[in-house]
Image (tube, rainbow, N blue to C red; front, side):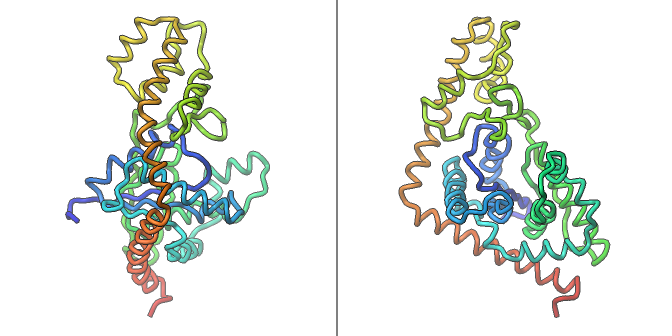
Length: 317
């Protein structure tokens, strides 16, 4: 590895089908950055336990995420692809962080505030989510963490926690930086809101052609304007501005034609990665071996860092 390479880390919870918002908001950055960085990408199965308490569902979701990662172009020869639970040192470090973190500080987290606002009964796992995320980031000594703008707080929590630990126990952790693609930081959904499974306004990343057609035709349009804003906002993910200006100028008010043009471009984009995913799914033992090897590599790296941390806090001799 070159000395100029940065360590890049990110993870995705195995909680449902990815959509175009997930891809352009975060996943695409993984592929774009794998050549020039030392990359660690993990399936956040411990984080997912806050939402999924069904073993079969969690296992299947984990396999699905690995297939998704590989299908979009992650190369296991270039990146370390692993399962969060294969690195138990992460939970160990999270507990150490718990000991130096106050409850009011964690109460500032978006996930906690959202749950509280909805009068939900909040689990300890949800409350402690930012510190487990900080442990994920800091244990692998990440320089860069690709996130959507709405997830930037996770990196801020990691930085704050690193700074506090360094003040108490001595210089130990580097301060990670978020990586956000400004032009696609928030991908719009079918209704113009942020594309999100919770809003039911998504175009699935591995959708079949008919599903793509149905979703695109359901995009909400503003009948008072000549250019359908929501259609255009999604279309610009696939075409440059010059191409779109010409297309939309020539078809002002012709929403059906513009939606059909979008459908063509979405299908052209999705088809090759969808078919690649189907091929990968035919050999699950090979996929699981990639995950196992990645876990072993990440675990060794984590244990090396934990030896230093244990000595710093006084539990290691």
